[in-house]
Length: 392
Ligand SMILES: *Cc1c(COP(=O)(O)O)cnc(C)c1O
Image (cartoon, rainbow, N blue to C red; front, side, top):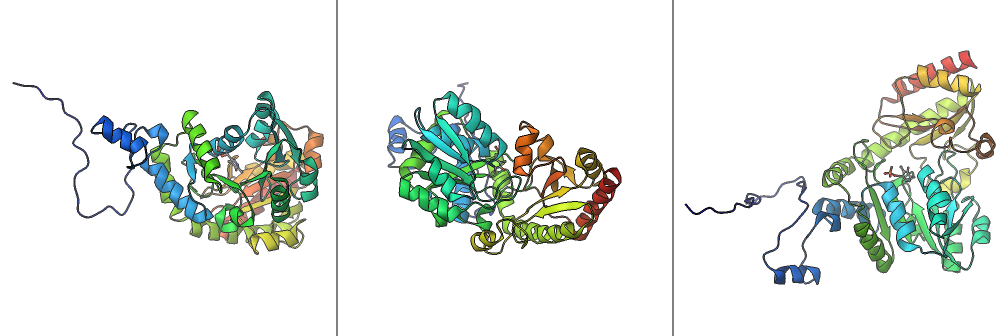
């Protein structure tokens, strides 16, 4: 009997179409002939070849996030830090200079402090609430400025419009990491950003079960350079993670609205509570950038609340232990509220003096508000505060 080689039969034909995107884990895509492959590589036909170069789940997700940000040609990569790397390492070269906000995400700060200088790319950190400081830091060889609209962990609001104006005047690219604010809080391309990126891991995917990033550039030539760099350096996103994030995005607007509503209530509760020194939330009139928060974020406060309790580390330990319904975990944007203590986690590498200068003491906490019942959540904070007062 003649033996035949069996290839998978392919997907069963169906006139009707699925309403949920299928998952395509295939690493390779077979072509009928070298001519057919040529026509794909030369752009006469569209098609996939090898998953590291691109796959359907990444493209579907990229288009969804593009629509939210008012972007086109966005790229989904394997993590938020891959998106940061695609920008910083994919677009800069030895001899360039890069400016970063001094309260960037911890790993972005590390890349500024360690990796870029190692490659001969000089870096400076500036206060992004001060456009004059950004202007003064610009040198002839400055390639780009990387900022976040709302800073971590002190919730300061960057002077985005003024920084964008400075960057445009001086011919420097403005890159905005929009993870904290999300496209429902602000769409940085509409404020002059040249490149916008996200850790999709956070509120966009929203369930702490997928690690992904997204980056888009206004200039298609820059977008293409980042795409090629991402493919070469293997920043490939997992198809399954892309699928999870697409599913998460279906409820993003609802989750955002609920978390924001609860955040406002929590901020108001905390600001009147005994043992709380200060509360940082953008819509509160006592916020240091209250006017800018109103004009930039259009009255939205977002889902991040920071606060400081009296009593130092002992009180902080007592708070975290007593508020045990809240996950003490260094992430954000999850369906569940998470509590982070920057002095022992994201900012532990800083000296106590440097932390003090930022206003990050041992009693400082950052909260990413989730979807719990607001009253139950506030009661949990109440338990934490009572314990903290006992320990202070
Ligand atoms: C989490 C985060 C990142 C990094 O994202 P990963 O998906 O964890 O790699 C970058 N920027 C901000 C603001 C973040 O919160």
